[in-house]
Length: 241
Image 1: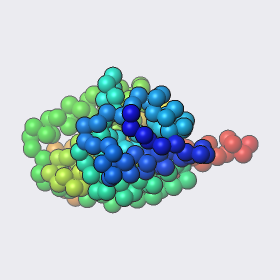
Image 2: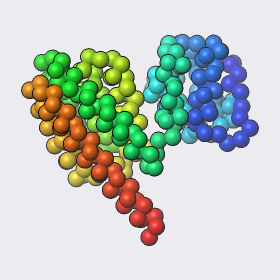
Image 3: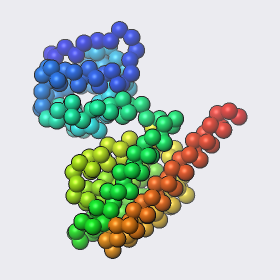
Image 4: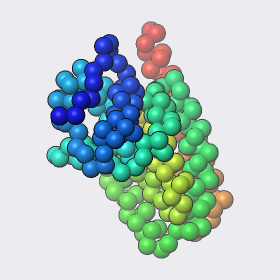
């Protein structure tokens, strides 16, 4: 069995991820290799399973590993040096610095949507509209809706036809706004507002109007930022009461 080494003290997921990356760079792990089962790997490295799981999720987001449900976790063929320069950002996003993520999304998504509006095909418009209807159908499941919301943004990026910008969008959009995202992030009212904003975005793309599409995305992202700011302020007020 491959020796993954151990850690003497409780560690952050970032250090676990860096250890795996180091093993890939040193050819101890190669594309196609399957990692040991989570429980076995955690015992081998003497780390907690939650920290290991978080590290693997970050590496999967960066396409360094592929997590195949029911099968295991596999090393991909992507060179880690090319995809992990900002691993610390992936690991440390939380409520205190979600504005950094917002700024990154704002810069990338308000521009890439212009390319999508110019280049999108009729078939892609149809696919986008169909996916949006699936989002609406899942509006009562906040966890599913948030995940689908993220994918909708990634779809728009893919329709730009620029694979580099698309990759940036995938990484930044999937960061979301912290490890405690999901259930807390959307009230029913937030979801209704998000759906309406998506409708405006898709309408602008459908008529292939880059400026209108960008304006709709700006409105959507700014409103999303304000909703999250309000959520964090409410949470802080609850803690201090």
